[in-house]
Image 1 (tube, helix red, strand yellow):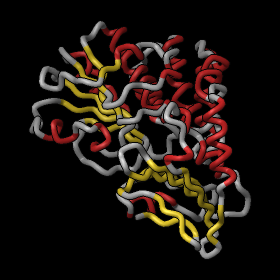
Image 2 (tube, one colour):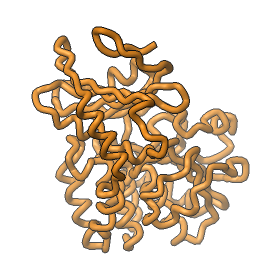
Image 3 (cartoon, rainbow, N blue to C red):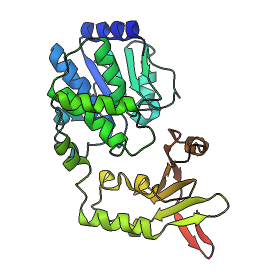
Image 4 (cartoon, one colour):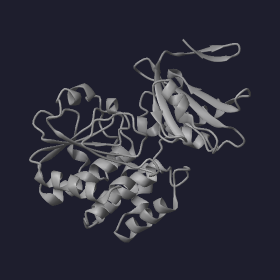
Length: 317
Protein backbone atom coordinates (compact mmCIF):
# COMPACT_ATOMS: atom_id res chain seq x y z
CA UNK A 1 0.00 0.00 0.00
CA UNK A 2 1.36 3.39 -1.00
CA UNK A 3 1.85 5.41 2.19
CA UNK A 4 1.28 8.87 0.69
CA UNK A 5 -1.94 7.76 -0.99
CA UNK A 6 -3.18 6.36 2.33
CA UNK A 7 -2.40 9.64 4.08
CA UNK A 8 -4.15 11.63 1.34
CA UNK A 9 -7.26 9.42 1.55
CA UNK A 10 -7.37 9.82 5.33
CA UNK A 11 -7.33 13.59 4.87
CA UNK A 12 -10.36 13.26 2.58
CA UNK A 13 -12.11 11.27 5.32
CA UNK A 14 -11.33 14.01 7.85
CA UNK A 15 -12.71 16.68 5.51
CA UNK A 16 -15.93 14.83 4.65
CA UNK A 17 -19.23 16.04 6.12
CA UNK A 18 -21.37 12.94 5.59
CA UNK A 19 -19.89 9.48 4.95
CA UNK A 20 -21.59 6.32 3.75
CA UNK A 21 -19.97 2.94 4.37
CA UNK A 22 -21.10 0.16 2.03
CA UNK A 23 -20.33 -3.55 1.98
CA UNK A 24 -21.61 -6.52 0.00
CA UNK A 25 -24.93 -8.35 0.22
CA UNK A 26 -25.05 -11.44 2.43
CA UNK A 27 -22.17 -10.04 4.48
CA UNK A 28 -19.56 -12.35 5.96
CA UNK A 29 -17.35 -11.78 8.97
CA UNK A 30 -14.69 -9.86 7.08
CA UNK A 31 -17.20 -7.52 5.45
CA UNK A 32 -18.86 -6.75 8.78
CA UNK A 33 -15.62 -6.45 10.73
CA UNK A 34 -14.07 -4.18 8.10
CA UNK A 35 -17.14 -1.93 8.17
CA UNK A 36 -17.11 -1.81 11.97
CA UNK A 37 -13.38 -1.00 11.99
CA UNK A 38 -14.04 1.98 9.71
CA UNK A 39 -16.97 2.96 11.92
CA UNK A 40 -14.67 3.02 14.95
CA UNK A 41 -12.21 5.24 13.07
CA UNK A 42 -15.03 7.62 12.12
CA UNK A 43 -16.34 7.67 15.70
CA UNK A 44 -12.89 8.67 16.92
CA UNK A 45 -12.92 11.52 14.39
CA UNK A 46 -16.44 12.58 15.41
CA UNK A 47 -17.74 12.16 11.85
CA UNK A 48 -21.33 11.87 10.67
CA UNK A 49 -21.74 8.54 8.92
CA UNK A 50 -24.05 5.62 8.20
CA UNK A 51 -23.52 1.98 7.19
CA UNK A 52 -25.47 0.33 4.39
CA UNK A 53 -25.82 -3.36 3.57
CA UNK A 54 -28.51 -4.89 1.37
CA UNK A 55 -29.00 -7.72 3.89
CA UNK A 56 -29.25 -7.69 7.68
CA UNK A 57 -26.03 -8.75 9.44
CA UNK A 58 -26.16 -12.27 10.94
CA UNK A 59 -26.92 -12.21 14.66
CA UNK A 60 -23.68 -14.06 15.44
CA UNK A 61 -21.76 -10.83 14.91
CA UNK A 62 -23.64 -8.79 17.50
CA UNK A 63 -20.45 -8.66 19.56
CA UNK A 64 -18.87 -6.29 17.01
CA UNK A 65 -19.02 -2.57 17.85
CA UNK A 66 -21.54 -0.49 15.86
CA UNK A 67 -23.26 -3.49 14.28
CA UNK A 68 -26.54 -1.86 15.34
CA UNK A 69 -25.77 0.98 12.92
CA UNK A 70 -26.16 -1.24 9.85
CA UNK A 71 -29.18 -0.27 7.75
CA UNK A 72 -30.85 -1.87 4.72
CA UNK A 73 -31.71 1.60 3.37
CA UNK A 74 -29.16 4.26 2.48
CA UNK A 75 -28.59 8.01 2.19
CA UNK A 76 -26.29 7.91 -0.84
CA UNK A 77 -27.67 11.19 -2.16
CA UNK A 78 -26.72 13.04 1.04
CA UNK A 79 -23.22 11.56 1.38
CA UNK A 80 -20.20 13.43 0.08
CA UNK A 81 -17.83 10.48 0.59
CA UNK A 82 -18.42 6.79 -0.05
CA UNK A 83 -16.30 3.98 1.40
CA UNK A 84 -16.78 0.56 -0.23
CA UNK A 85 -15.52 -2.45 1.71
CA UNK A 86 -14.74 -6.06 0.71
CA UNK A 87 -16.97 -6.05 -2.36
CA UNK A 88 -14.73 -7.44 -5.11
CA UNK A 89 -17.40 -6.45 -7.61
CA UNK A 90 -19.40 -3.24 -7.19
CA UNK A 91 -22.52 -5.18 -8.18
CA UNK A 92 -22.33 -6.95 -4.82
CA UNK A 93 -23.37 -3.72 -3.11
CA UNK A 94 -26.75 -4.12 -4.89
CA UNK A 95 -26.74 -0.34 -5.43
CA UNK A 96 -24.06 -0.27 -8.13
CA UNK A 97 -26.28 1.52 -10.63
CA UNK A 98 -27.12 4.22 -8.11
CA UNK A 99 -23.42 4.66 -7.34
CA UNK A 100 -22.55 4.87 -11.04
CA UNK A 101 -25.34 7.40 -11.58
CA UNK A 102 -23.56 9.82 -9.23
CA UNK A 103 -21.24 10.66 -12.16
CA UNK A 104 -18.20 11.32 -10.02
CA UNK A 105 -19.96 13.76 -7.70
CA UNK A 106 -18.71 11.90 -4.62
CA UNK A 107 -15.26 10.81 -3.54
CA UNK A 108 -15.05 7.02 -3.37
CA UNK A 109 -12.53 5.06 -1.30
CA UNK A 110 -12.27 1.30 -1.72
CA UNK A 111 -10.75 -1.28 0.65
CA UNK A 112 -10.52 -4.83 -0.66
CA UNK A 113 -8.41 -7.95 -1.02
CA UNK A 114 -10.24 -9.48 -3.98
CA UNK A 115 -8.85 -9.30 -7.53
CA UNK A 116 -9.83 -6.10 -9.30
CA UNK A 117 -12.94 -6.17 -11.48
CA UNK A 118 -14.30 -2.61 -11.41
CA UNK A 119 -12.52 0.70 -11.81
CA UNK A 120 -14.65 3.18 -9.89
CA UNK A 121 -12.71 4.35 -6.82
CA UNK A 122 -10.79 7.60 -6.46
CA UNK A 123 -8.64 5.95 -3.80
CA UNK A 124 -8.20 2.21 -4.14
CA UNK A 125 -6.54 0.16 -1.40
CA UNK A 126 -6.37 -3.39 -2.68
CA UNK A 127 -3.90 -6.06 -1.56
CA UNK A 128 -4.77 -9.33 -3.27
CA UNK A 129 -2.15 -11.14 -1.20
CA UNK A 130 -3.85 -10.08 2.04
CA UNK A 131 -5.90 -12.72 3.83
CA UNK A 132 -8.78 -10.32 4.55
CA UNK A 133 -9.96 -6.79 3.95
CA UNK A 134 -9.33 -6.05 7.62
CA UNK A 135 -5.68 -6.86 6.96
CA UNK A 136 -5.71 -4.18 4.23
CA UNK A 137 -7.26 -1.74 6.70
CA UNK A 138 -4.49 -2.57 9.18
CA UNK A 139 -1.88 -1.14 6.79
CA UNK A 140 -4.02 1.95 6.25
CA UNK A 141 -4.18 2.43 10.01
CA UNK A 142 -0.42 2.02 10.37
CA UNK A 143 0.39 4.47 7.56
CA UNK A 144 -1.80 7.09 9.22
CA UNK A 145 -0.45 6.39 12.72
CA UNK A 146 -3.93 5.74 14.09
CA UNK A 147 -3.84 4.31 17.60
CA UNK A 148 -5.27 0.80 17.72
CA UNK A 149 -7.71 0.39 20.61
CA UNK A 150 -9.67 -2.68 21.75
CA UNK A 151 -12.53 -2.06 19.33
CA UNK A 152 -10.22 -1.81 16.33
CA UNK A 153 -8.24 -4.84 17.48
CA UNK A 154 -11.40 -6.92 17.85
CA UNK A 155 -12.63 -5.91 14.40
CA UNK A 156 -9.34 -6.53 12.63
CA UNK A 157 -8.86 -9.93 14.25
CA UNK A 158 -12.46 -10.96 13.53
CA UNK A 159 -11.98 -10.29 9.83
CA UNK A 160 -8.76 -12.28 9.75
CA UNK A 161 -10.17 -15.21 11.74
CA UNK A 162 -13.31 -15.55 9.63
CA UNK A 163 -11.72 -15.06 6.21
CA UNK A 164 -8.94 -17.57 6.90
CA UNK A 165 -11.23 -20.12 8.60
CA UNK A 166 -9.12 -19.90 11.75
CA UNK A 167 -5.85 -19.67 9.77
CA UNK A 168 -6.58 -22.83 7.75
CA UNK A 169 -6.84 -21.28 4.27
CA UNK A 170 -3.75 -20.94 2.04
CA UNK A 171 -4.20 -17.15 2.09
CA UNK A 172 -2.82 -17.17 5.64
CA UNK A 173 0.70 -15.71 5.54
CA UNK A 174 3.34 -15.08 8.16
CA UNK A 175 2.27 -11.43 8.08
CA UNK A 176 -1.33 -12.45 8.74
CA UNK A 177 -0.23 -14.36 11.84
CA UNK A 178 1.92 -11.43 12.97
CA UNK A 179 -0.96 -8.97 12.65
CA UNK A 180 -3.32 -11.32 14.49
CA UNK A 181 -0.81 -11.68 17.30
CA UNK A 182 -0.42 -7.91 17.48
CA UNK A 183 -4.20 -7.51 17.80
CA UNK A 184 -4.13 -9.73 20.89
CA UNK A 185 -1.63 -7.36 22.50
CA UNK A 186 -4.10 -4.52 21.84
CA UNK A 187 -6.87 -6.34 23.67
CA UNK A 188 -8.70 -8.35 21.00
CA UNK A 189 -10.78 -11.09 22.63
CA UNK A 190 -9.97 -14.28 20.74
CA UNK A 191 -12.23 -16.56 22.86
CA UNK A 192 -15.21 -14.24 22.26
CA UNK A 193 -14.53 -14.15 18.53
CA UNK A 194 -14.23 -17.94 18.34
CA UNK A 195 -17.40 -18.52 20.36
CA UNK A 196 -19.42 -16.24 18.10
CA UNK A 197 -17.98 -17.11 14.70
CA UNK A 198 -17.13 -20.80 14.91
CA UNK A 199 -18.51 -22.56 18.01
CA UNK A 200 -22.02 -21.37 17.24
CA UNK A 201 -23.61 -23.99 14.99
CA UNK A 202 -27.16 -25.10 15.74
CA UNK A 203 -28.21 -28.76 15.67
CA UNK A 204 -30.00 -28.25 12.33
CA UNK A 205 -26.89 -26.58 10.90
CA UNK A 206 -24.66 -29.46 11.97
CA UNK A 207 -27.10 -31.97 10.45
CA UNK A 208 -26.99 -30.03 7.19
CA UNK A 209 -23.20 -30.12 7.24
CA UNK A 210 -23.55 -33.88 7.66
CA UNK A 211 -25.76 -34.09 4.56
CA UNK A 212 -23.16 -32.18 2.55
CA UNK A 213 -20.43 -34.58 3.68
CA UNK A 214 -22.58 -37.66 3.07
CA UNK A 215 -23.35 -36.51 -0.47
CA UNK A 216 -19.75 -36.00 -1.56
CA UNK A 217 -18.90 -37.56 -4.92
CA UNK A 218 -15.65 -37.37 -6.88
CA UNK A 219 -15.66 -36.53 -10.57
CA UNK A 220 -12.86 -38.81 -11.72
CA UNK A 221 -12.32 -36.97 -15.00
CA UNK A 222 -11.24 -33.83 -13.14
CA UNK A 223 -10.49 -35.34 -9.72
CA UNK A 224 -12.91 -32.78 -8.27
CA UNK A 225 -15.22 -33.46 -5.33
CA UNK A 226 -18.83 -32.30 -5.63
CA UNK A 227 -21.70 -32.13 -3.15
CA UNK A 228 -25.18 -30.66 -3.44
CA UNK A 229 -27.78 -29.36 -1.02
CA UNK A 230 -31.34 -29.10 -2.33
CA UNK A 231 -34.14 -27.10 -0.76
CA UNK A 232 -35.36 -30.32 0.84
CA UNK A 233 -32.00 -30.66 2.59
CA UNK A 234 -32.19 -27.17 4.06
CA UNK A 235 -34.10 -26.19 7.17
CA UNK A 236 -36.16 -23.02 6.67
CA UNK A 237 -34.62 -21.55 9.82
CA UNK A 238 -31.03 -21.91 8.62
CA UNK A 239 -29.18 -18.64 8.12
CA UNK A 240 -26.43 -17.86 5.64
CA UNK A 241 -24.05 -17.84 8.57
CA UNK A 242 -25.09 -21.40 9.50
CA UNK A 243 -23.86 -22.44 6.06
CA UNK A 244 -20.62 -20.48 6.28
CA UNK A 245 -17.60 -22.73 6.31
CA UNK A 246 -19.11 -25.90 4.80
CA UNK A 247 -17.17 -25.72 1.54
CA UNK A 248 -13.98 -24.89 3.41
CA UNK A 249 -14.49 -27.89 5.65
CA UNK A 250 -15.19 -30.17 2.67
CA UNK A 251 -11.95 -29.02 1.06
CA UNK A 252 -10.07 -31.00 3.72
CA UNK A 253 -10.79 -34.06 1.58
CA UNK A 254 -7.46 -35.61 0.64
CA UNK A 255 -6.08 -36.20 -2.86
CA UNK A 256 -8.56 -34.12 -4.87
CA UNK A 257 -7.98 -31.02 -6.98
CA UNK A 258 -10.76 -29.14 -5.26
CA UNK A 259 -14.34 -29.10 -4.00
CA UNK A 260 -17.59 -27.68 -5.38
CA UNK A 261 -20.67 -27.25 -3.18
CA UNK A 262 -23.90 -26.43 -5.02
CA UNK A 263 -26.78 -25.14 -2.92
CA UNK A 264 -30.34 -24.31 -3.96
CA UNK A 265 -31.45 -20.84 -2.88
CA UNK A 266 -34.94 -19.65 -1.86
CA UNK A 267 -35.02 -17.29 -4.88
CA UNK A 268 -34.71 -20.17 -7.34
CA UNK A 269 -31.01 -19.69 -8.04
CA UNK A 270 -28.07 -21.95 -7.31
CA UNK A 271 -25.12 -20.82 -5.24
CA UNK A 272 -21.78 -22.48 -5.92
CA UNK A 273 -18.76 -22.44 -3.60
CA UNK A 274 -15.36 -23.55 -4.89
CA UNK A 275 -12.37 -24.39 -2.70
CA UNK A 276 -8.94 -25.88 -3.32
CA UNK A 277 -5.63 -26.42 -1.57
CA UNK A 278 -3.89 -27.53 -4.77
CA UNK A 279 -1.18 -24.96 -5.61
CA UNK A 280 -1.67 -25.61 -9.33
CA UNK A 281 -5.45 -25.02 -9.35
CA UNK A 282 -7.11 -21.59 -9.60
CA UNK A 283 -10.84 -22.01 -8.92
CA UNK A 284 -11.53 -18.32 -9.60
CA UNK A 285 -11.15 -19.03 -13.33
CA UNK A 286 -14.17 -21.34 -13.25
CA UNK A 287 -16.11 -18.96 -10.99
CA UNK A 288 -15.59 -16.08 -13.43
CA UNK A 289 -16.79 -18.19 -16.36
CA UNK A 290 -20.02 -18.65 -14.41
CA UNK A 291 -20.42 -14.96 -13.61
CA UNK A 292 -18.82 -15.05 -10.17
CA UNK A 293 -15.34 -14.44 -8.83
CA UNK A 294 -13.11 -14.54 -5.80
CA UNK A 295 -9.65 -15.82 -5.00
CA UNK A 296 -7.50 -18.50 -6.57
CA UNK A 297 -8.21 -20.88 -3.68
CA UNK A 298 -11.72 -19.75 -2.67
CA UNK A 299 -14.36 -18.48 -5.08
CA UNK A 300 -18.10 -18.49 -5.65
CA UNK A 301 -20.83 -17.90 -8.19
CA UNK A 302 -24.61 -17.80 -8.56
CA UNK A 303 -26.51 -19.21 -11.55
CA UNK A 304 -30.16 -19.62 -12.45
CA UNK A 305 -31.74 -23.04 -12.22
CA UNK A 306 -32.46 -25.90 -9.87
CA UNK A 307 -30.94 -29.30 -9.20
CA UNK A 308 -32.37 -32.45 -10.71
CA UNK A 309 -31.13 -35.94 -9.89
CA UNK A 310 -30.59 -38.31 -12.82
CA UNK A 311 -29.35 -41.87 -13.19
CA UNK A 312 -25.82 -40.57 -13.73
CA UNK A 313 -25.79 -37.85 -11.07
CA UNK A 314 -27.04 -34.28 -10.68
CA UNK A 315 -27.72 -31.74 -13.38
CA UNK A 316 -28.84 -28.10 -13.43
CA UNK A 317 -32.16 -27.47 -15.17
